[in-house]
Length: 234
Image (cartoon, rainbow, N blue to C red; front, side, top):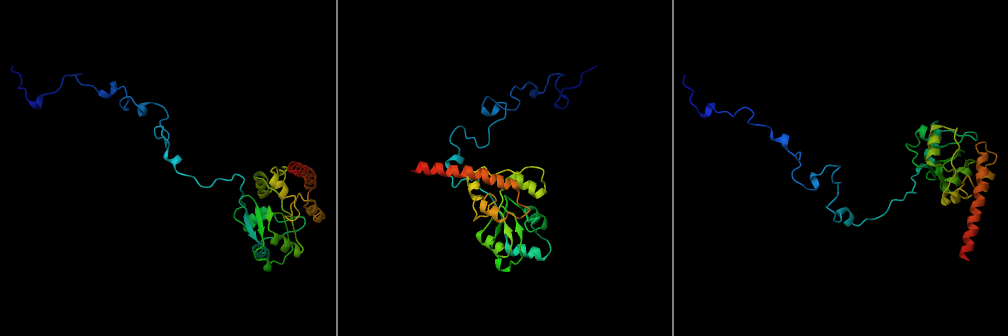
């Protein structure tokens, strides 16, 4: 019996003569030694081999003020329009707060607090009782000239959130920064820590006894700070 003739069409490798070369690889596809072939989290974005990154070579302008606050402005003419539409109301027992302004749609976001502005005061005619975070001088004058009362009250983020949600089971925080204490202790700002403001609004039901206690305690601290600074200047 003669064997078949060997040709290119019937040539094939012996059994087990071939194997998968990747099974014996020691670099797992990372290539030879080097920084990028190491295991671990890798190189951070922006790393340039140790030289000064380009992000540090460009000059910077300005800064981020961590104490900056964004107020939600509300003009008097807008408040009057909401009152005429029946969407807002106030009384000595229930003054207008950030909650009423937000739920009525007068503002779409309370941000860090409500600030009442005097724009459109010529259209304002209703006596209202309101406790915003801030109020301009013209707004205060217009509200009080029509028989209303405005008392500016300090809200930290948690107290403002409780106000919007209508929670009254937690004690509201008092101001801790000196600038806030001084601002809310001035009568011209109608701050709730001012003895003059509390005296004018003493007959109003929404004035809390805690406000009077804070006014006394923080007033003593403020006066001591003023006396100490005056002595240092001398």
